Each structure stands twice: as C-alpha cells, then as structure tokens.
Length: 458
Ligand SMILES: Cc1cc2nc3c(=O)[nH]c(=O)nc-3n(C[C@H](O)[C@H](O)[C@H](O)COP(=O)(O)O)c2cc1C
Image (tube, rainbow, N blue to C red; front, side):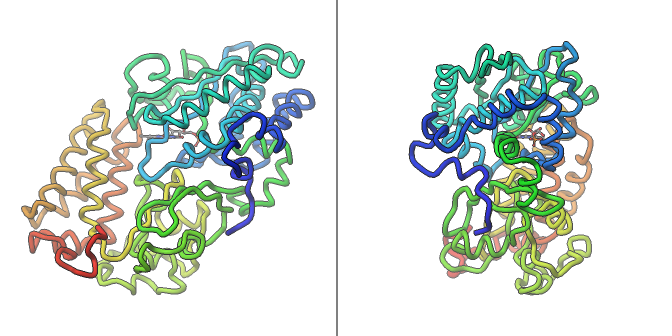
C-alpha cells in the first residue's frame, strides 16, 4: 500500500476517538501553533501553498475558496463542515467521524481562526448513529478541555461549534441546500451567484468544506505545506480516503497516496475481485462519476476494450487516448473520462448485469430529486421508468436512444448537480455497455440470466 497516513494515522486503536488518545498522538498541537504563532492570513497562505483540493466531489482548491473571506472585515462569517455523505458508495467521512472526530474539530478550529469565524457548524447525515454519538462526545470533551468557547489557549480567539443532524435527504449535501436546511427551511439548493462565500448561511459569507478536506488541515499546519507536497503528485498533492465496496475481497476505507495505480490497489491492497472473478468495471468516485471498464483501468495489461464482448460496440467517444495504467489522480481519471469524485469506489465483477446496475442507480436519483427543477423532477422519473420497463422484459427498440436524449437534455438545466450526475452516470453506462441493453430489449431478459457462472453476481 502506498505511503502516507496523514489521516488514518490518527485512528489506529479502538479508542482513538477519545481526546486523551488524540492528544497523545500530537492532536491539537497544530491548533496551538496556529493560534499562538500564525496570523489568520498565514494559515490560509499555508493551505493555499499545500495545493489541498476539496474531497467532497468537485476538487475545488481550498485556499482559493478561503481567500475570498477577509477575516478582519468586521463581518460575521460562518464555517460549515459537510458531513452529509449521501453519495452511494461513499463512507469515508463516516469513518473519520467514528474514529477520529477530534481531527475534524481541530481542523474546524484552525479553519475558523483563518476565516474569522466565531460560530461553526457540522451538518451530519441524519442516519449516522455511531458517528453522531462519537462526534457529540468529542464536542463535549473539547469544551471540557477549553478547546472550544472563549479565549482558546489564551490567544483571545473564541469559537463555538454546533452539530446539526440532517433528515435523510441526499440533496441536503449540496452546499446551498445544506445551508437552507441549517436555517430550518426545506433543503432546496439555490442558484449562484451570489456565491456562498459572499452570501451564505444567514446571508453571511460562509465556507463549506467536506469532512475529509478539513481533516487534512491539522497535518498541513503541523508539518508545513512543502512537507504535504512530498505526498501524492504535483497536480494532486496528498492522499485520498477511498471507501471501497461491491465485488471486492476486502472492502473498507483506505488512505491512498495520489498517483497510486488503481488496478494495483484493487488487486493487491483490496485482495482482488470477490471469488477470484475477473474485473468487469469500476465506478471510481461515487455513483455520480462515470463507470470505467477493466481495460480502461489497466490498458497496459488488457489492451483497449479487448477483454469483454460487451465492448464490441464501444463508441469512439468512450475511447481512452492513452495506454498508461489509471492512477488515483484527478488528471488521470479525467483523461479516462471520469473523476475521483467523493472517493467512493464500487467494484463490479464480470457477470454483473449493467442494466440492473443502472436501474438501482436511477431508482436512487429519482427518489432523491427534490422536485424543484422540472428537467430533474420529470427526467429522473422518465429515466427510471424506461430502465424499469427494460428490466421487466417490455423494453422497446427506441429506449436506448431515449435514455441518451433525456440524459443530455438534463445537462446544465438544473440548479444543483443531481440531474447532471444522473445523466453522466446513465451515458457512462450506455456508452460502454450498450449491447447489454440491446440484448435485454431484444430477448426480454438479461444476457446473464441463466448463466451458471454468473449466479449470485448481479
Ligand atoms: C446533490 C449533491 C449532493 C452532495 N452531497 C455532498 C455530501 O454529502 N458531502 C460533501 O462534502 N459534498 C457534497 N456535495 C458537494 C457540495 O455541494 C460541496 O461542493 C462540497 O461540500 C464542498 O466541499 P469541498 O470543497 O471540501 O469538497 C454534493 C453536491 C450535490 C450536487
């Protein structure tokens, strides 16, 4: 497994969530360093120099987001940690909350100091139980030790934190919907501009960062931006928490250095595909990122689209222009037409019916559409119903083209990214596995139904 344990290094025992253990590993020393030895702008400068990018999905540079806020402009500012984590396949933020909640709290204090924030918020997914209890326990411990409240470390800096529980909506993880939900309203996303860093929570400048994004901050402040840049690659410094699920021998949360080969990660670190089967595909960063075939992950080993009959009809647009193995890095994933997204990797074994995979995904998007924008509200239902019809054996020859049409019509027409994401996911699967849909429509059943070798796999 590749190097750095910048986050997971804080969570190696069953009681690593406690304040005592966190402090024994050097916890809260970065906070002390920032409060007593750095100006707020210097903290932001260090984060900018580190090249840290957001881990919530869009990989937005953290320093650039923070730099919009002037900590001493006399305005009220807010910080929200996004712990909603609703993206299917993603469970790395939950892991941080359960195993190292003080890492998040220390990061929020450092960020609050840099941004001139007096009141900070954690918006935590409503279904999380242990994670919530661990976080609430850590908040209590931190207040008890004078780490929150007034005049922290005698620095004159004061900060409070409030934990807000969501109520089970995927859309509430979207930054503007999250703010609306904290304000006690229906969690609807809103159009930008104005940006949230200009007008956010309670109409005040607000920074929203993902839990894992924030969890990198204490390490960067403790060791410096240059030390951080020794991990990962020039364009993507540091590590990623990757939550792995699906047909894989050792699912779980792994910390992986950027630049590490994805194929090696699956076959060696995660123990390979469940039951020793061949790898068919991988959804690399939560279901909103485009699916990749085995040959796109290891083109140097498998050749282009050569390993599976399904790829016979692969359109030009889905081709990849390189023969390098795919690595954990934004640029590498982008070159293959996908992204690292939220780090939720789903491994799919050969023999899995991709029509049914898409059906499950569309059921989710349809259920979670907030209904505010017509193309998403109606489009999710259309997509879902068409794939349901194909799976029930009543598919029509024009269905595949109709799925493309609706996905493309959605693109860029909605306030938040849910409709776009569903469209990308649909087009991604159709581009690479179109013949499975055509088979299902022509025969009224999956090409894998009745295949003894495939039993139990889809
Ligand atoms: C429908 C939808 C759901 C989202 N859910 C989450 C989520 O659960 N957690 C998260 O960190 N970001 C989520 N995002 C992304 C956030 O809007 C935002 O970009 C992110 O929290 C910013 O943090 P970062 O810059 O640290 O990545 C979601 C976006 C969309 C469109």
